[in-house]
Amino acid sequence: MKTQLRSSRVVIIGTGAVGSTTAYTLLLRERVSELVLIDANKDKALGEALDMNHGLPFTGGVKLWAGDYSDCADADIIVIAAGASQRPGETRIDLLKRNAGIFDSIIQNIVKYNDHGIILVATNPVDILTYVSLKKSGFPSNRVIGSGTLLDSARFRYLIGQNKGINPRSIHAHIVGEHGDSELPLWSLANVAGIGLEFSDQDREDIFDSTKNAAYEIINAKGATSYAIALALDRIIVSILQDEGSVLNVSTLLNDYNGVSDVYLGVPSIVDRTGVRQVLDLELSDQELIQFQNSANKLKSEIANLEL
Ligand SMILES: NC(=O)c1ccc[n+]([C@@H]2O[C@H](COP(=O)([O-])OP(=O)(O)OC[C@H]3O[C@@H](n4cnc5c(N)ncnc54)[C@H](O)[C@@H]3O)[C@@H](O)[C@H]2O)c1
Image 1 (cartoon, helix red, strand yellow):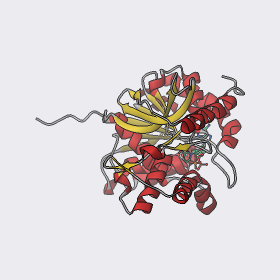
Image 2 (cartoon, rainbow, N blue to C red):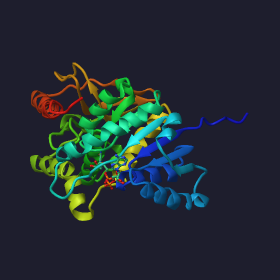
Image 3 (tube, rainbow, N blue to C red):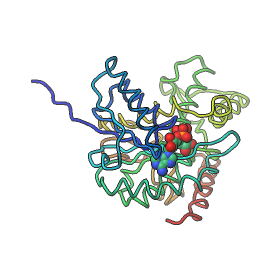
């Protein structure tokens, strides 16, 4: 008997470097049956949709179009990658004022048409804007997710892999906390096949500096980051649509978690069809605990200045 594949729709709001590369990644990997592109700059969304549609004879049968918010009605996942990105030298927090403003109307427009989907935020500062999305949407927190430190953890794994001469897919290692300058590496959990990894102090410093400063380095060199974040978003989307239950360092609402409450941070979480099904407990050292709480406090003081 032929298995009927469930149709799935992903809407991407903001079709700049991140949004359009994410759409292209989903298209190439044939992840969804319907892909909708929305941008305040309608021509941009239209141009990206046309360009990608012309590649369909070489890929699978994805239905892709430049749409509007009414297309959110049937969306399983709505990705938000709209808004300002870092200019050379800017931090992610520097984007808060500019990007929090546009989230008002974006979230209002989404909830006008959709009450069942999952909102996946990439726009920076991602942890704070995911919290803003939660408050403004009224969705349950399991269905409002940020890309968190999934990308940072991928950078960390890549750099550890380079250092050890091991494929990064075989490296298990985590960056947690803010997707930004206060994030922290969990060296004690870094392992290959369950075997802990040894590093010199200098290697630790070099690997973490390169992880944390990767975005600055790439933005200085080419103006934006796009490929790895697109693959990270693809990973989260697939874990949701295929009900995988994969453990991913997404940004999720924390309550009574290592002394932290009412803030979004990147931590290992089980992601499935329901969104974030469960946040995994992390045993942090005394020093890691202080760093983690500092990361939370930094974001909470920024949130306190917002009208929510
Ligand atoms: N979470 C992560 O790991 C991660 C990684 C890379 C970039 N980012 C962030 O993603 C965001 C997008 O980055 P980019 O490089 O694609 O920027 P970009 O400037 O290339 O694209 C942004 C797009 O958003 C659109 N836009 C602006 N306001 C809008 C609105 N109200 N509604 C709909 N569309 C709107 C613009 O027209 C533009 O096409 C930035 O905030 C960036 O910092 C996050």
